[in-house]
Amino acid sequence: MPRIADEVRSGETITSLDPATGEIVGAVPLTPPEDVERAAAEAQEAGSGWALVPLEQRLRVIARAVEDLLDREEEIAQLITRESGKPITESTVVEIGAAALQLSWVARNAARYLGPERIPDPQLVAKAKRHWLVYKPMGVIGVIGPWNYPFMLPAAQISFALAAGNAVLFKPSEHTPLVGDEIARVFARAGLPEGVLRVAHGYGETGAAVCTAQSVAKIMFTGSVPTGRRVLVEAARAGKGAVLELGGKDAAIVCADADLDRAASGVLWAGATNAGQTCAAVERIYVDRRVYDAFVRRLVDLARGIEPGDPKDPATPVGPMNNQPQHEIVLRHLEDAVAKGATVECGGPVQVPGLAGRFVAPAVLTGVDHSMSVMTEETFGPLLPVMAFASEQEAVRLANGTEYGLGASIWSRDPRRARLLADRMETGMVWINDHAYSHGLAQLPWGGVKSSGHGVTHSKFGFYDVVDKQLVGEDAGRLPGAWWYPYTEVKRRGFLAVVESMSRSELGRRVGTAWRRRGTIGRYVRSLFR
Ligand code: NAD
Image (cartoon, rainbow, N blue to C red; front, side):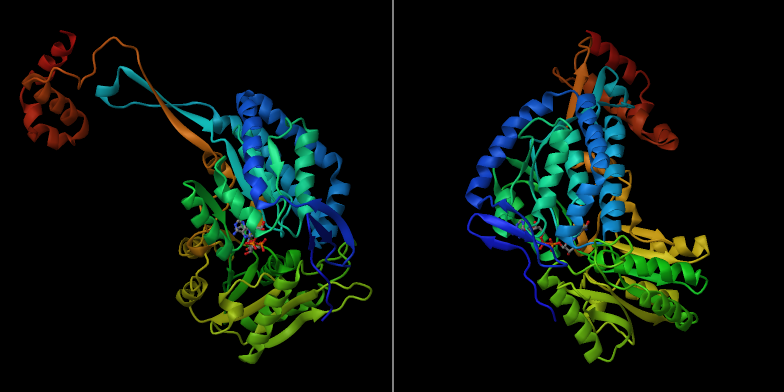
């Protein structure tokens, strides 16, 4: 197995290395945990001015960030590929392309969700009042990011937070710090006032300090389940909330009536893209036993054509694994499956001539079952285990048979069957005849259930996650409060009569006690004007 270093920590810096070659890409200064509180306080200070900038102006900054991103897409895509190892086509399409779509949706639509919202008042007793929901910035949002989608994922979360008038303290992954800096540069060139988006580089301890910093109001965390749980504890201890986007073990269910060519192409892409290092990668495939052999044949044929190579080449479909610990998990899952009787139909670890990186060709595994870690734990690599099912009930049981609940896909030509199966998936997202594409469309919520997360990002909920919701109640002041002093028998009965008239069913109203006392409401209303 080729051995190259991941990023290197030395003293005050992190030196970032290219996972394909081991060459130095650049270095960033570390923010030690003890400096995080100060960085957060400075972001809070800068953010107090940003919160006062009118929403339309804030959104213009985000729109300009999209222009900057697209103007400089080649340079930024090259950096993403050099630092993360993903193929340049994915850096362009999935990182830059998705980020541009996400940010432009935010710039165009945030005003629909963040402006004051009038709340209708159907109750007679509230007729003299008017109510609004006002969405207010929370202060500083701590965004902690992973390395697998180092640009588009945090950039989208940051854009939601900034649109809502927050400042952001962003801790990129230690594996992709330079891409983290690039996000900040895009917003800076777009005119974001200095200090509103602060980057704190570092390892877990710096991330933990972001969670506990007094000046950070809320955490948006994306990463693994174990770290996410630590983040939740730290945030709770510091009295704040956290949105967690965590790991997954997505299943694809291929029905007997599926378009097998489409299903094989789709699950191969969703399992192998970014070398399988995708939270919503297809990591398990359950196929109706009537079409199992035909499906496996197609999948293996296609997978054999997906050869790892130099990620800087636009034709390369799979680059190196990003880091050593991740590579080791993939090899462990592969070895465990083989030791328990699985067959590797194609793929596995390979060397790419001239490149020192850790490469794994998409591997199709058959003869698998749920005693193998490859079927129950997150692999985060291009392994595609395929298992037959005898009934849809069994498929549902197997698909739901893990602690994870991020995404799932159903492959069928029958929309009714597909929707019924989709409804039974214990996941935050389910796609029919495709998989995982929806992250790039910021109008759609993204998030998992069970161990895969708490809360969602994107969509209207992405805004609601990063604002305080303030109720404003307004009374024109013409009538006294219907429940104020003095307390009298007329008020006691009259109020109840009004409530009954509004709240009971027609029949209930007819038999209701207070309603039957004619004149009660009239006496009550007259008493208010006295
Ligand atoms: P990770 O949990 O190792 O690290 C994520 C981030 O947390 C890094 O920036 C890291 O430095 C930081 N961190 C580490 N310890 C911390 C602590 N104690 N407190 C605060 N921050 C801490 O995850 P990773 O390896 O970078 O990313 C891969 C994982 O992320 C996979 O499990 C993947 O499924 C998941 N992921 C989920 C989504 C999603 O949307 N659900 C998206 C991408 C990745």
